[in-house]
Length: 537
Image (cartoon, rainbow, N blue to C red; front, side, top):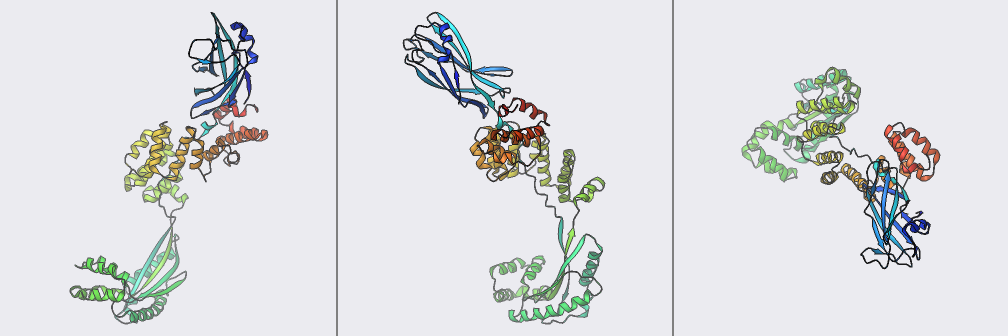
C-alpha cells in the first residue's frame, strides 16, 4: 500500500478553488499499490480519508478513476459524494470526516503494461465549479500471467515402431504313438530342412541375432496323464540328441533350453480351430468348460462321431518335439529411416513411416509422410498425427478437416480443444478438454485457468509437472523457485527467470537473464515496459 494526496476536500466556508488548495489534507490508499491484470481485468480498492470539517455540508464532489496508458486512457463512471445538507441520493460525507472505500474496475487493453491510475475530481459549491488537481494513486499494470504458453499440448498417436523385432524360426519332429524314438525320416523332413535353412539365413543376415533355442517335447492328450508326462520327458531327451544332429553343420548361438509338456492341449485346440471338423466349435467349448485333463479326454471320447477323425488327423500331429530358434531382428535405425524416405520410401511399412515422420524437422515433410501412411495403409494414427502437425503449423482449418476423418476419442477431443484455445474460444476449449479427460488435456485446462485468473486451480492441475507453464503458475502463486530453476535456455524461459530474480531482489540474475531474453524482439519490447523490472531499468 502507499498513500497519495487527493484534492477532493473543502473546508466548510471554502470555494471550489479553495478546495483545490486544501488538497494535501485528504489521503488516499490503493490496494494493490501496483496494479495487476487478472483475467483481462484490472481491479483495485481505493480508500479515501476526508478529515474533519473538510467536506462542506452543501458541496457535491465527482471523483473519476482513470487509467492513463501509452496510447490513451480509460475512465470509469465517476463516484459522486455529497455534503450532509444536499438533498440528493449520493453518498454522504459528514462534516466530522470519514473514510470511503471504493472498488475500481477496468478492462485491459494493450498498452496498459505501462500505466498509472489517477483520480480526477470536480467540486460544485453553490454555482461554482472547480477541477481539482489530478493525483496518481497507483502504478501498473503487471501482466506476467500473459506469459503463459497458449499453444496447447498435443500427443501424437503411438507409431508402434519396433526397433528390435522378436521373431522365431521353427522345425519339428514327430513320434509314433507311445514312442520316444526319433525316426531317421524325421531328421530329413521338410520341416527340419526349413529349420536348417532358417538357421543359415540368420547367420548370414547381419540384422538378425539368434538369442537362444527352445526344445519342447509333447505327448498328445490321449491316455493317462501320468504316462504322458513320463513319455514327454523321454521325448525331450531324444529330441535334444536329435537337435545336435540337426544342427551339426548349422551354427546355433545362445543357450539351448529343453523342456517337456505332458499333454499338448494348447496345440490340440489350435489344430482343431484350424481344421474343417464339423463339430470343432463343440470340441473347443468342451475345452473351455473343463480344466481337468481326464474330464476333457472323457468328454471328447464321448463324441464318438468325431473322435476317430481326431485320432487320425489331429492327435498324431501332437506327438512331437519342437525346435524353436528365438531371433532378434534389428529394424531400421533412425539414420536409415531418414535415408530411405529420400531414396526408397516404398519399402517402409506403416509403422516405419510413422516413426520417420517424427524424425524429420520440416513440418511440410511431416505432412507428406503422414499423408502417405494414411493413404497407403489407411492408417488412423497417421490421419490423426497429420491433424496434429497442421495444428503445430497453425493451419487450423486444415487441422479441422483432417480431424473430421478421425475417431472422436480422447486425443480427438484434446486436439479440438487446442484448436479452440488457439482461436480464443476458451469456454469451448474447456469443454473439449474436459471430454478428453487425459493428463495432457488437464495441463491444457490449466492454461485456461491462468487466463481466467484462477491460479490456484491451475496449480492443482499442474501438480507434479515441470516446464514453463508449471513454473509460471508457481510464480503466480508466490513460489519463485521453479521459475528460477528453469533449465531451458530459450529467451522466454530466461525472461521468466528474470522475473523470479527481480521478485527476489537478485539484480545480477535479472541482468544475465534479460540479456538472453532480449534476443527475442517482442520480449525486449516487453522488458522496456514491464512493471516487474521498474527498479532495474
